[in-house]
Length: 390
Image 1: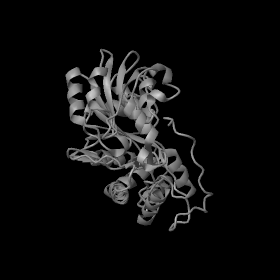
Image 2 (image 1 turned 60 degrees about the horizontal axis):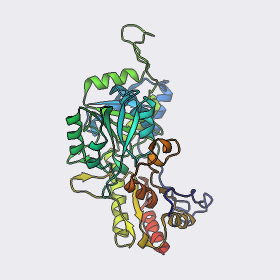
Image 3 (image 1 turned 180 degrees about the vertical axis):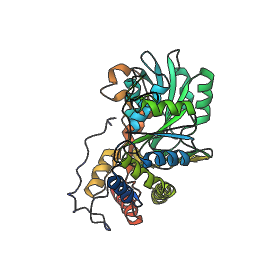
Image 4 (image 1 turned 90 degrees about the horizontal axis):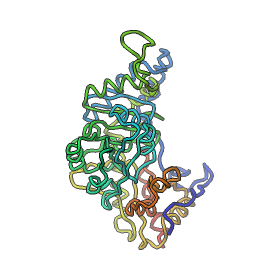
């Protein structure tokens, strides 16, 4: 069986889907905008505060940091620019290395390259799908500057041993928390555990601004540097006076207005994903050949996406299951293709082996996971999976 997934299966024409209660395709994810989003954006338009200044940016940064258990938040244009900015604040540059999981979205590795450094890859744990903490130390060298952890699909990494390693070797810890809004590790909220955490607010995330990102941190100096460098490093001494080569990574007030309205619904938006996951797991737990998403004691998994592995005992392969579900109007996605298999990185990592990440890529898919899913839609998806089984 090939590791790299096939092409995306065709879905029914919009408006002619087979979802019993919606009459259309069930998308793998879509925004759930059910609060003050329109009212706050209208305020931006009415008052002309539409760019990178305005009350909504300040309020969104403060409130999002609060729900993440962090002191400070710095809003950015995307989760990718948040990672790039955070790595820059950590002093990562040419000649440095950053430990990164190979099983992650490509932005994790790309932002390391944006600084001129190189990612050094670590395989995943079979049980959690996260970076294997036991395999990190062997990858640390005198060039290593930071460890970037990825809380895969909303399931937090095992942070304590990673932090101990970082302390031992004098390394920064950066959380790629793009998918982990509201997740918790041993009672501590994701967003305030490492030196900094970076979140994405892309349209499919639990909290969305359409596009956008945020750095959260408990370090005041880190916060002040990030706030300055995301805004061309304008000086307080005089305007158009710049001491650093900086960035324009500023979020707009309109995007922050949407974000603030989303944060006002934070607990509901997070709990919707958790409830959906519970309904999926209850309906699919006895289906032979499916490995359901990880649940770990002391860990709050927020199930950004409800992922599962299609094993040989299911009777058909992952790609065939996706095709049959698509014919029923159910959209799915395959798991990440590991960094070491990506065309842009393949030659650099050729010969290195990451068997767990490759197995996840080969077997994994995630099901419709939007906050606005109905129970009837989840039941429809689960019944379709049962009917598709070989």
